[in-house]
Image: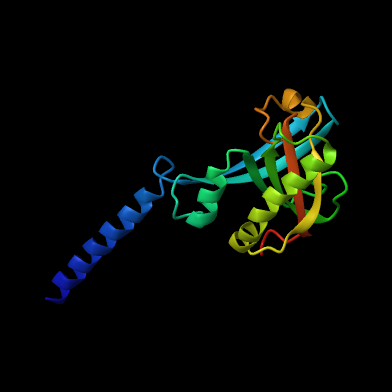
Length: 179
């Protein structure tokens, strides 16, 4: 009797273990970590390394529905970038950045109107973003992208930097990647 219970337990253990092993196969995984190295020979001749986390499963990287919907509904928001890259924008040293890229409105006339309206939009999102990522980013500056040189060199679409993109930059103390 003891042998039968042991054999049944062993079969059940193997069945559960096999299921777990197959769920981790690369073709079935929904979570992807990508390391990217960009060698920039055209602009400032330096290398940039980055790690990107992607998931097609909404359970792995959870963003509250309210803030997600708010970002999706605002057609002017092109990207929300959280980075701990040193010197993430001009004038930022030894700090991490949250950059909210917003498409310029044709109604904004003049530099001050562009900066003020961009900050109003970005400020309405930063509190929610700080809550999601447990950060305390403070406003640093509004950066107006005047040229499309970076996109042409990197052959990107213009979402990260482009001639119609205004970046609201928020900074916070740089955190260790283990925290």
